[in-house]
Image (cartoon, rainbow, N blue to C red):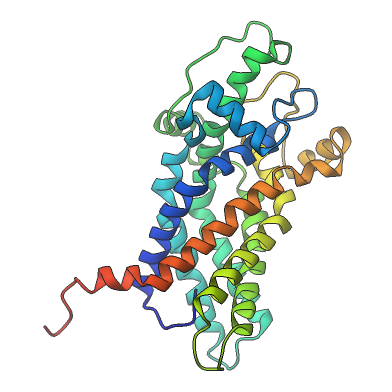
Length: 312
């Protein structure tokens, strides 16, 4: 991320470690984002992020804020590895003919975003079911009128149980429900983030050939990440709604992206597409800030230094 030359293996290690630390730190905010995005008019349990987190702790305990975290912690490393490796690959090949223009930077970001959905889609699919289970359970207790008659409360399934159920009922396609919406979110995000970070980072360089100071890279990562996150939030709302398998009887169901857009506009208005936007910004900005800390400390390079070198 910063401009010092880092080998690809070190980048992958740094990205994986940054992802693990970042997810652990901001996962409760991500849980609040999912629950705020999923609640519809007539079945609103939470008024804000803080209200959601307070009610979650009261009803589910502290660790209730980490429902679905195991899925993210397991898959965030390969997700970051694919994203970073793909972006490096495309930037390298697009710069062979000369200067890496803004358009080429955006094209590299597009390629990286497209590649990462291989891991992102099933990860998000499982995570959303686990995160939203607490909201649905709270609805049964606090808003029984929103629950279909005869509905029996069942124990929240684990990630492995969900995976087996989806594979058994729908095959591999079950894990990739919402793939189109995920592409519509992650490709524009990468198109915005990577060029914006690179150009903001370049503005803080003391000389043309040297690296930017750490604090400049840190701020650039936070600003670029939060900007891209808010910009694609409407698609993130659509993706969250499409990937949610369970919902209250009073809540809409959707057959696809266009159906989801139409029903949200008709029943909730355009403001609904910004649900959870500030939560998403608060999640993404620290993730990229933490990544800068890991890169600056050179954790990946330090770990690789213990491996035997060729020729030794």
